[in-house]
Every structure is written in structure tokens, then in C-alpha cells.
Amino acid sequence: MNKMKWFFAASAAALMLQLPTGAQAFDCPNRFEAAQAAIDKVIGDMKNMEGKMTGEQHALVHALLDDAKQHLAGAKHNHEKPQGVYDHARSVGKAGAALSYAEAADMLHQKYMM
Image (cartoon, rainbow, N blue to C red; front, side, top):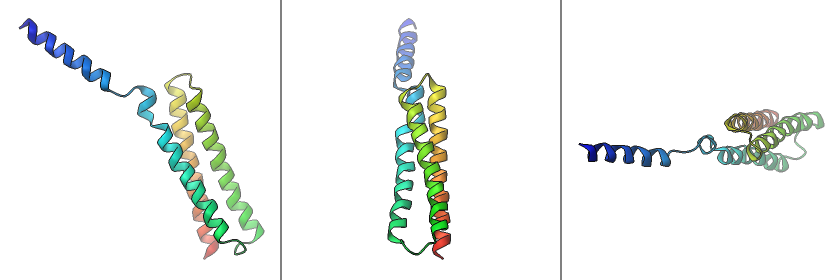
């Protein structure tokens, strides 16, 4: 019976060591990549459509892109200099905001192209 307790204790300890830590669980780098890819897509699309938007429309799309870039930079800062899991959580939130702003810029750009 005593051997069985040690076996279960060792198994539980091994399982706990394999669980992701708080920072890894947030998966920040993948979120950064998604936001950057969305930003890059809009920038590429805008270059291909140059001259088809007014200056004001172009500025409005760029304003959303600037917001996306600012949030992404903030997300990376929180990830690189964390004080704890709270900073990683903020990083995830800012990366999500960056992705949302990039998607909004893409939607606005598509509307202007219609």
C-alpha cells in the first residue's frame, strides 16, 4: 500500500511539472504574430489600392493602424518586462486590442474600396 501512495505522489508531481507556467499559458508571442500579420495585411492592401481612396479616408485607416501598432508595442513591453502574471494578462489584452484595431482598419479600408 505504501508503494502505491509513492507511485501516485510521484505521478502527480511529474504531471505538475509538465503543466505550463503562468507566462507560458498566456501564449503572448502567438498573439503578437496574429496582430502583426493583420497590421501587415492592411498595409499591403493599402499599397495595392493607392489612389483609390481620398486623403481623408487614407488618414482614417492609418489612424486605426497607428492605434493597432501602439497597442502591439504596449503588449510586447508588458511581455518583455513582466512583474508577474498580471503583466502577461495585460499583454494578452493589448495584443487582442491590436488585432481588433487592425481588423477594424481592414473593414474600414474595404468599405472605402466599395
